[in-house]
Length: 402
Image (cartoon, rainbow, N blue to C red; front, side, top):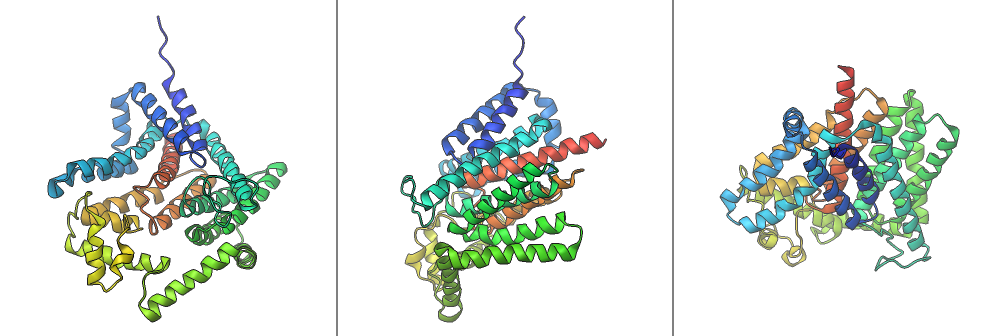
């Protein structure tokens, strides 16, 4: 008799490889994602799986997002464009794989694989920065080799705080030294790159990490202030990229307030928000449909007295919540908030996992205010990997307490 393969074990191996691939290779990430999903299908046990999914808020919310997006064909009518858009939601299936098939004993393997890959990414970034290597068309002034600087800075800000949490909860002195060394080099890497989103997220996450990990709150305040002040002071004075982009942000905001000029990076995001809310107000219940074309952005730019030509090439509103509310109306916005709510309400027995989950949820929601995180590959992988992981850990710890 032929023994049935242990699909669950192989799924977990694929998920570890998936976590390692995410920071350094889109091709490898796609491969291990597809492999994990295929093994999950072959694993079977669908009656048991559906029983699990229908009682899990995150699984329900993801299913609602996909289902309602497809349903929008009924009031928009462009089936081809809608199917092509929704096809990208395949990345979210990993959340279901984690919830039904992940073995909690591999949790440290997932986190270590991710951190190891981030270390490789960081070394590559430094090598580009110091012009030791030339990688594709990546400039030494913004050395983000494997993803956009906005996504990289967000993931790096999260990584920095994962390291800090591990430093606080690690008992082995040798590992403590490694984590604090990695923390310093990763923080430095964050500020030599051009992603201001991650640098802002860094501030909030540092406050969460330190106040959650240090019992004495006066010490926590002093330590968090010191870390943030030193990081930003050194970055502003020693990193030309951070210095220039900080000044540019000030200029963009000043241009908006004083000159009503929205053409800078910061001003564009404000203008896109205004135009998105304007579009939403005209289609508040069901939205425009997934196949909504941003070609109409010039019309809304003109109506709001913005430079229409400046906005003609934008593919979305650079804000996941604005984009979803325009496409799917108040119902879609409710679904997106349900997804975020589910992340913040996961329960843990372990304080370490509780902090890590809070750090991820906070970083993702802040990232979503500056990027279409539910439709771009790397942000979706970031979401699927850690939402899936923490959702599964929460389930395992809840079952253990029963």
